Length: 196
Image (tube, rainbow, N blue to C red; front, top):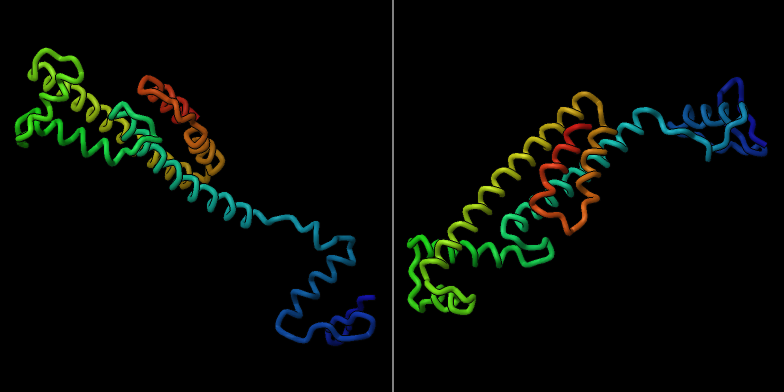
C-alpha cells in the first residue's frame, strides 16, 4: 500500500521509503493522480507532445516526399519509370543531345548506328527527334520542379499557421502515388494538393 508522509512528502510502499531523490515531486504528483483513480497506462499526451509528434512526422514525411517528387520528375522528363536507372539514362540522353546539337563529337558514328537500328531514314531526322525529346523533357522537368518548390513553400506556410494536419494531408497525397503516374497526371495532382 502506498503512503505519503504529510510532514516530509516522502512516498512509502508497505512502509518502505521508495524515493529520496530529486524526482520526489514527480512521484508525489503521480501518487496523487493514482489516488484519484488514474493508472499509469491511461496518461494522455499533452498538446505539446502531440504537436511535437506531428511536427516530427511532418519533417520526416516532407523529406521523403520531396525526394519522391524529384525522382518522379526525373523519370517522367525522360519518359522512364522511377524504377529505371535514372542516373544512367540522364547521362546517356544528355550525351546524345550534346552530340545531336554538335557540342560533342561522335567519332564512332553511334547516333547514325542508332538511327539505323530505330528505322530512321536519315541521321538528321534522328537528331531532330533527340533534340525535341530532350528539350520537351527539360521543359517538363523545369515546370515540375517549380511545382515542387511551390509545394515546399506551402508546407512551410502550413507549419507557420499551425495547419500541421493539412500539411501532412498534402504530403500523404504525393507519398501515396502509384509508380505508374504519367506526365498528364501531374497538373491534376498538383491542383488536388494545393486545393486543400
